[in-house]
Image (cartoon, rainbow, N blue to C red):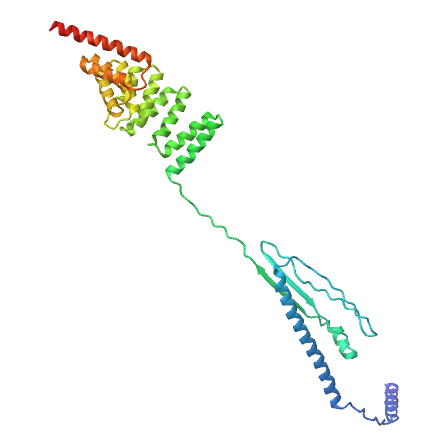
Length: 356
């Protein structure tokens, strides 16, 4: 332990002697630059930055005016390259300006971008500030033109008549394509929407009859007659269909009812069937109504004369035969028949006079 303590004492003495050997050095104070130098440097820097800001604002205003004018012009994009002769402390600067961006007919966007750089300065401090901070202001303008169209969906409820018309149109198209079953289905659908439509019912009955489904055609017409008792269309259609089936007596049944407003078509078919079935009263009634509606028709006067003669109204029959001869449209055969009947009536009247 004594040896260690002796070594430590010697080390401490050595450090004290080393400290005593250091001499004090007198340092001359460094002269600082005057304050006016720093003020002048700050003023110059502020002046340079202010000039750059004004220049950038003026160029931005000009570019905005150019972009507004170019919105109605064709697409034009121009790249300009300007090279500044580099000095010992300068670099080449390339400026790219997009004069106008294309716009489309739908949603379009026009934008323009200008990159501005501060020219290099001879002042190393200013040049270093520009180089380090990359002070390149960018001005961007975006304009949105035209909004997307809006689509409105509206639900419309069709009337039964409109639905029937659409179904009938499909049926007619099927007929044009020789699609018989499609036509039947179309007319049947149309008739479900408008069951009182006599024309639709008649067309569908004709299709059934064309398919030799006579029973269904008859039932369809009969149902329509029951729904519209005073209608003539379905009665005439059913009567003609029965005539084709050679059921003359049955063909007269749908035509039994008659009114003052009955049509000539209805009355003529009724009179002819009644005359053929020797139903003289019905035939006489029908021809009387026909000559009242159409007095210039020779056929109606001839039919009336025949019925009057059958009813033993000889004088009336003679007058009706004469009326038939005086009308236009009498065939030669009918004229010969009328002359023969007039001669027979004259003989009959002469014999009756001699008998008296």
